[in-house]
Image (cartoon, rainbow, N blue to C red; front, side, top):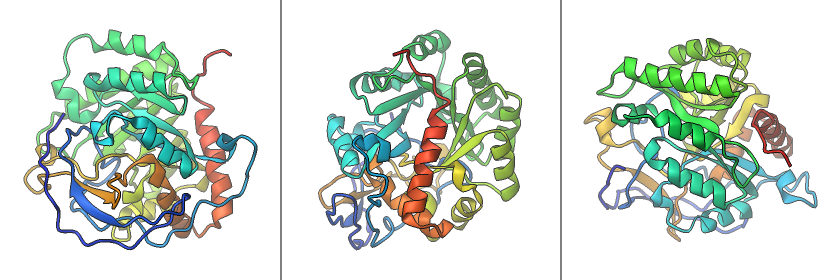
Length: 353
């Protein structure tokens, strides 16, 4: 856990944004005094500076594909860190806000053995939550002992959702100021081997390391599916990842107007490989990982009611912006996202009914 100080950032208020509940949300940027864990930059480039909040004047998710079972016409946040106490102690409130925005399922990713127990508890408590367990590249130097035995126990236990866990969040981060690439690769490879042996999905973080990540994924072709979260890459890298069976997930950070590389990645990614993530709760990584040029606090966007904007409910905003980038009708993209989610989850092991 990385403690952060409470400060008020000098960010202007934003215009309201519509969500499924039709409530108006005015955003300001603040920093949390809670302990933090959550890596946020995902794949590709390092975050450099905080920006103003989410896209403005977004319409609700379309009412298409309604059915008697709301989960059959819903969205999935495929990458979030609910174990972070910045979300508060009552996660039922976070998930209720998500359901109001028709986000009925989330995938909660662990990052270090220190948070595995809490992620397991969350998965055992909430039927809407799938889980993944792994060691994030930020924390490999702090891990010792026989974590493999603990991981094996967790992977053998299905969540309340009925799904067995995946492996994640794992990967490589070559943007870190102080790092040992060989240690990162050693942990990444060992976890890829576990996923391959058990036929489990992987959720991968890749910053300034896309080429090496794709090389290692190719060597572990027995892995059923890979999610490259927050991905940023060239068209050639996108095509290679697709050939390896990868999906790409994007957050509100990915669609910001000034993030040209991220938006170009979304434009070039095949529509049948795109998924949505919040990567909540944090917006920027702590300074200790990326040197003095990074902010010393974790800037966060909150509504006037105090809720974090990097939470599952707000993937609706990312959905709307991707529609614009891809020049797709809302209903068309909504159906596409549902098909993508079903395809991705078809690779996850389920407990026998």
